[in-house]
Amino acid sequence: MVEEGKSKLFILKPITDRMPAVTRPEGHVHFRTKMLWTAFILILYFVMCNVLIYGLSSNSLDVFSEFRAIMAGASGSLMHLGIGPIVTASIIMQLFTGAKIIKLDLKKTEDKSIYQGTQKLLVIIMIVVESVPQVYGYLMPDSAFVSKLNGTFGGNGMLMANLAIILQLCIGSYIVFLMDEVVSKWGIGSGISLFIAAGVAEAVFTGTLNWMPINTNAPLSVGGGDVSANLPVGTLPKTIYLLQHMSSSDLTRGGYETMMLQQPNPILALISTICIFFIVAYLESSRLELPLAHGKVRGARGRYPIRLIYASNIPVILMSALLANVSMFSILFWSHPSLSRIPLIGHQWWIGGYEVGATTPSTGGAWYLSRVNGVQDWLLPLMNPDRYSYYMMGHEYYQVLLHLIVYVGIMVLGSIVFAKFWIATTNMGPEAVAKQIQSSGLQIPGFRRDPRVLRKILERYIPAVTVISGAFVGGIAAGADLFGTVGDTSGTGVLLAVGIVINLYEAIGKEQMVEMHPVLRGFFGEQ
Image (cartoon, rainbow, N blue to C red):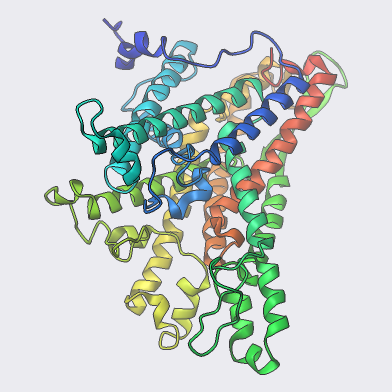
């Protein structure tokens, strides 16, 4: 029975207390140990990305193809689901907590513990929820694998093959969850962030320098006549190849447009990626600093930084994961053998329509929420709809414009909402920060040493900066998508990677400082 006044989630406490978990260190973990654990988990991540699911057919479809950079996974591998189940569980818990459906006081240790335990249980549920529909619709088992299993455990080879793939997906996803816990408790930063940055960095590198042709079964060619162009995939090799093999007249008639605008990896995408790097680096370094002084030690002064990107890149991660789930379920409801027959929502164009064999929506709500990928998706059709009608995919002029407005708007507004939820649930609000500063013995010079006074001062800045932070990261991610990104990592992916690398650099600096000055451990929450 649950005690009166407590959340009903305490019913789950006997289950959550017995779930496998990474043990939290009892004391301070040395910097070298944290670096070793972080490096080990990063290597393990790349290993899992290259371990393919046994028995999976090459004809399988990837419903997360548009969100691979954010999902931090690799199609057809043990990392197929990536961080999707973890982030989705976090979204659900934040929404329910923010809407007061789940009544927990996260300032209390007991309530925070049951919140984290419930989220772990929800991660397992989401792993199954995301695995089963994909296997029974898009991740097809290989015919040879099915034949081997015929006659075993009841003789249904297809059933056993599907269960084997589901089991591999579940095991891989839960290992990812444990890896995230290892980094959070024994390493530096967040495992989720580390995986995203690693995946994006790999995609940007190959998208810039890959010299392999688009079609690896055909020789390189610039096209012309009945021959389709088969150019290097990478931005720099493609540009060099076109300049070497095209005449001046050919470059003028379409060569420069191919280099600058045509997918994959046009020069504009590389420029956009570089610009995003510098913009995010500048915004991450912009901050408001409140002067602090020690109440007992004369002359001991410091500053509390309130960064312009106060909510970090978490809101855009959550928003992108939400859109990834919208995409996944819309394609399931459209073409899944069973789900497409559900009344009212099955195979309904207003939810999202797809061409046969495609994973990108072509109509309906899912299309309006889908990523605007480069200037060919909006700018070229809007400037010259007659010449670039192919890119409009049969849509009207106003629909292309509405798609642009809806996508940018939902990214900005959604990131603001998640920024507010994130600050409220991670002890980064005015009251929690005031108590943190107060407990360290510091105060703002000229004001009474009272947490209520400190909270009122922080309330002038933190709520406003939270909204600005969410709007900025959502707007930058959407803006990068409008101009394209090298490696097709999406604007969100590039934004996240840059922010994560900067935050990781700062975290390493903080760890080194704590290592040199153990007195600072109390202020940073270390033991």
